[in-house]
Structures are given as structure tokens and as C-alpha cells.
Image 1 (cartoon, one colour):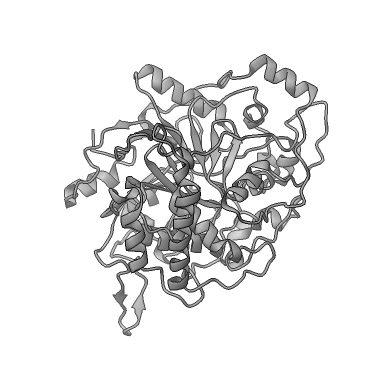
Image 2 (tube, rainbow, N blue to C red):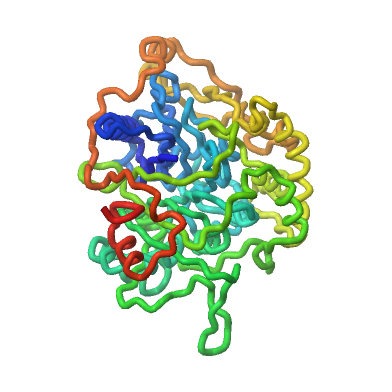
Length: 523
């Protein structure tokens, strides 16, 4: 499958889509999917702009509202995760994931989904130790503190993601896994971002929970953004599921501990918010209170053996290819096009499908969700694994089985059920904001037969205004308009799949991490 990977979006949808259309036309190639690694900025109106955490000079409505109202249509199926500059009130409506507009899917605060046969998981937000252990207590309209804390990663969502046991093709995050800088060309990175050195040397650049998930889940690819620099790395996974090193005092060191590298670098997990980043140190990430990471139990082996062929033919990657990209500006390395091999599944179309294992994880852990500052204690791993195996059988019987011979995966197909909730931008109307009950979230919870805890008493969706209806009538189903192509041709490489599945030698690995403009063989 040919996908495009975008770093920080920063509301530049028109320019991104124009660049992709230029690539497709000039190189006679088709792109199946666009993935965006955060700072998407789904601003529906001025109220969403006011809720976004960023310096005043960067507050802008952008062009997303035209896609939201229906005046424009995304020309390529798109999936994204949240970052640290978002329309957080809108994304909260779709906590479990959903359409922010036609053809653009939000993966949720944490989630896993399939596009065709490509399995994608991700985690929205950035890591901050002070909010990691709390529940989701923030409510729109946000005060100054909550507008920042709402996008901080919570332990509950990491705990959920850590329960994924079937292999992943792609994992998306906004901030980097901690210590990832040690697995690429650290010297080159430091020459571009010199202020990263202190964090690299102290092994505090990036997110400890992301580092744990990288080691645990072993995805084939990990894409990120946040640091506004292009950086490639290759992380080899040891045969032991949770390898440990022993320190001089005999204590156990984290599996992803530092390696010998004189040019090590570390990066702040929130460079765009210096005040928030001060004094925040990396802390060990756990998946449950005093519990180890989940192991592959006998129940899971039986469940996997009985599962549909989707994941039975996947294997965990021996190495993860990491790529972080820049923001969308002229001359910057913000976009990458590459081929990712997928398994052949007759009946799978290039559209979004719910993930059977993830639906089971959501059902098994939903009672642990907290909408207050206090996070409920997390269930020990052996118990939650048993629950997930039971819930997967429920999902298979009640959702997966609804496929037909002509459409075997139809039961898992994501419904095209987008509706507007808040009023789209209207220059003649002052939007006051509010919290909305999103019908997509209600439908998702009804499908899983779990209570909805996301804005359960929120406002009902607001119909389009006369001005918005006129805009839709004038431009519905149109792609991006009037956008300058800001393509840096050197930053776009349509690569082949020769590298995938290969065991890289030292020379090949050095070429891979040094050539940050591509994933694949050096061309």
C-alpha cells in the first residue's frame, strides 16, 4: 500500500493535499492513504480557536472548517492523531475515534484501526509526568491550565495500547519515544537542533510511555512529529519480549536504556510550550499499578488461533523503522511517500475498518475510564488479558460475524456517519462554544453495548447556517482550492519495499539512518 506521511499539520490541509495531488500527477502514482502525526487543528469555528493552547500570534482558523462544513472534500482518505495544538473540545467529542469531516478519520485519544489490510494504532497528545496518572477531568470551555493538560497523555490510554498483542504495521504518535535519538544519526540531528544536546545526554528526550510501547508492540513502522525536524531511526528488537540490562550496582535498567554514542541528544517533549516543559523529567512508564507488561497467555494463543486470518499471518517486526517529519512550510521535510507491504485479504477494500482486538480491549477496560481527576486503579495484567479474550469472542459473535459472503469484513466497516455538531465558521455569527454530544460516539458505544461517558449531557448537533449551506452548495465535493504547492521535492521519495523484511547489515543500517529523506533503499 502506498501511503503519505505528514509531520505536524498546523491547519495546512489545503497545502498538504495540493502537494499530494502534485505528486500524483507529476509522478503518475496513486496514494492510497494520508497519515498525519498530530497538531491537526480541526478548527470548526472561532470558539475552537479560542480553546487551542498556543501563543496568540499562532492562533488562526485555518481551512479545516471548509472540509467540516462540506464545502470541500478531502481528496485522499486521511487518518490522524492529536498533538499539543488542537481543537481539543472537538477531539474530545470523538474520544473513541471518528470522522472529523468526510474522509478524514481521527484515531481517538488512543486507538487501533485498519485501512484495508494496513493495521494502524496510535496515541494522541504528548507526555507530561504531572498529568500522566490522572483521569480526563478537563471540560470545555477550558481555562488556561486545562487547555494544556487536556492533551497530555494519560496512563489509562497507554495501558489500553499496551494490551495490543497482534502485530501492528504502523504506530502513530506526536512526541517521540524516549531515547529514539540514539538509534539514528544523532550527530546529524544535533547539528540541526543543537539545543537538544542536554536532553539527549540525560536520556530525557521524548516520551517514556512511547518508548515502552515501542519495545512492547514492535510495530513495523513508527511515525511521529512534534520536534519540527526530519529524523529517521532503526530500532532492533531483541528476542526476549522484555530484555533488561544490569547496571553496575546489580539493579535492572530499562530495556531501552542508553547505548554508547558520544553524540547523544535529548529533546523536550513540548518545545512549543517552554513553560510547561520546565522541570519535567522522564519517569518510568507502567501499564498498571505495580504490574508487569502483559504477556502472551494461553488464552490469547487460543483466541489468536481461532481468529480470522487478518492477524494470524502477521508477525512482530524484528526491527521498527522510525520516521519523524517537519511541519508544512516551504523547503522543509514535511511529507514522505512510501510503500508498506500488506497481507492479501480477499474482500478487504481500501476503506476504514474497526479492529476486532481493539474493540475487545475497549469493552474490557471501559469500566476503568475516569472522567474525573482521580484515575481508577488499573486491573492486573493477567486478569485484563483474560477479560480481553472473553470480549474478543463477544466482538466476533456480535460485530465481526455480520459480514456477508460478498463482504466478509463488512461487520467491521466503519460507518460513514459524520454529522456536524458545532456550527461551522460563519462570518456573520459569533460562536459561543459549548460541549456537544456527538452522535458518532453514541453509535460507537451502542455498537459495543457500553455506556457513553463522553459529554453524555452535551448539546445536540447544530444544523448548518444559511451561509454554510450556501458555501456547501457552491463548492461541495471540491478539493483544496487556491493552495500553493510548498513541496520540497528533495523531501518526497516514493520508495520501494526492498528494505522491508530485510536484515540490515551495519553498512546498510548506517545508510538508512543517515539518509533521513527516505525509508527504503538509498537511491
